[in-house]
Length: 152
Image (cartoon, rainbow, N blue to C red; front, side):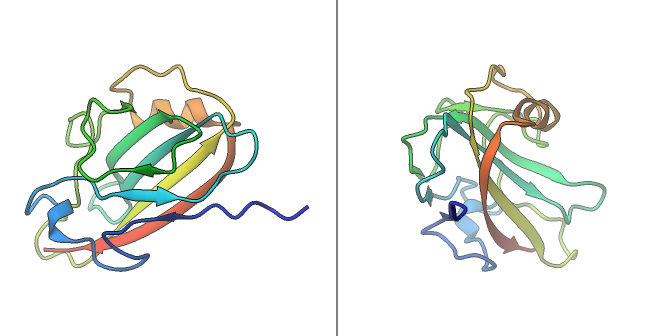
């Protein structure tokens, strides 16, 4: 049996391209619209993680979302913190915090990773990346990735 190809994309930018200013801290700071293809059979929910591994001291968490229903194939632009279950990002806020690299540090990469899970998660609103990682361990059926860049 061939593995399921599971793809994540955005109408705002393509893989490896610049993330539009609208989705960064220098402008509207709203989440980009995302869409994905059908996940593997047995998917019970999705979890989304957005991070910046090029941040100066450590990987910076920009967005954590989980318990996205298995029939969902997109998240609209400017998703509110009250939509779906969302965690606390490294800006100490609930929901999306867009790219905001320090000036003069060159381009940073922002990875949007969508996980197809075989469970719904029991995590509370506001949970951390560490808690999310622990909760999805052993439950990931497939993952899809989209990377965009930003700099100031």
